[in-house]
Length: 113
Length: 113
Image (cartoon, rainbow over all chains, first blue to last red; front, side, top):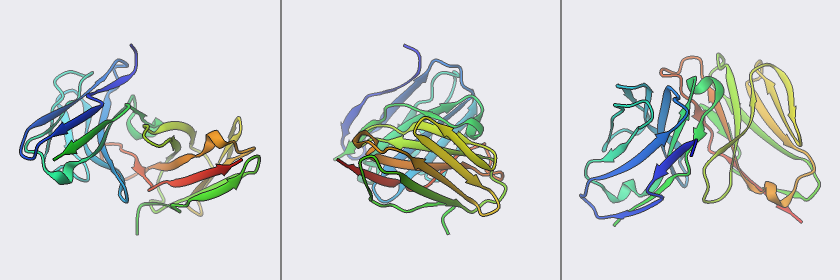
């Protein structure tokens, strides 16, 4: 299916475990982004990528790792999950970055227990 | 001062009335402006984009931009219960490295039948 897909939709993990959230887009968009959304904080940028093999930190990168070996995939890894990383995670993509807006994936609700 | 500010609401509007949402931004060089709608438990959906001063209409939605006063607004005419959602304002600041959007915290709109 065309579009941007995230997996899994829901994930429960234990403190200290490594977990990877997947993001895949079929438009060949150059830009991809990872946000987390929490009550009281809105959308906060974790990492972004302007092209394959080019990534950079956003506002809240600590505890997260990203890679982008292929244009269509942008996985987000929590190296050692903490309860403060319980959140809803959104991946987004855009052909021209912020200039013409983003399209968001459906999100992953992550709970760290 | 936050870069993009919105009143969190809730903005309560009778069905059939006009809902008026406001957003102010701090970067005077900002070039692109967007409104996203987010239903509870869902991902943000782009509903309007505006790049030039003035009004832009799309169906029941009108976006208004005033760069001199650094605000952008969204009007929803003939409000329907299905318009009940959180509306996010997003701005592409000129100085943003990596061509990213900055989001406001969102305004929750409740349309009452």
